[in-house]
Image (cartoon, rainbow, N blue to C red; front, side, top):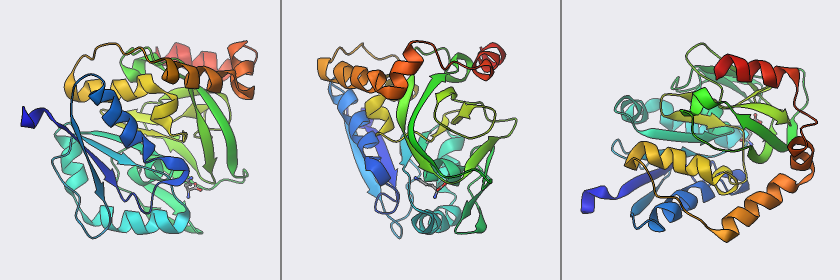
Length: 261
Ligand code: GLN
């Protein structure tokens, strides 16, 4: 059936896509295909207009200049806002995450974001956050989905504070994440922001399936040895090994688990 094809729009892929974030689209497309479902991936570069009818919108990370260029076009268009209003899924990484909020800093200037997530990104005195990031999903924010630990790579100067309408995606086990309250990412309805590169959905396939389930409903379970192996390798990496042994679980982590689950 032609209209069962899931449309995935990658916004500004030529500007926002550090660390292979475009891979998130490929993971979504593949995980649908392995279940016999079809997907159409659209790259939407500035000047071509944001489609209003996609099922999933993806935004990646980028340097300040690229982030600003990409935002200029997105702020001008109301298409993404309308798509969110009708229930479309948005998954945004790093610069993309910041763009979805109310404001973000770029090259010393505060810029307006799209306001689709109740978050503010700002510069603090803290140094750039660079390295592996490991976080435990907050069950209440992800509708109780069993995601397992979230792993990825982060590289950002800004920090992101959540407003009351946004829920945290996860609690940081190691790394920086949002940089406030020991939290990582944000979820508001079907809009998800994160600092995880990797690409995030390759390293965290259950998160990919959660996003897909919001579009196509319940999914059959996939058992893929290579995917499991990649995930295991990442989790057994230095930060993962520490956290798996339970050594770096902080009091803040426990507090957030209690508060949000
Ligand atoms: N320019 C933003 C920052 O440094 C985003 C960086 C990124 O997307 N990797 O905070």
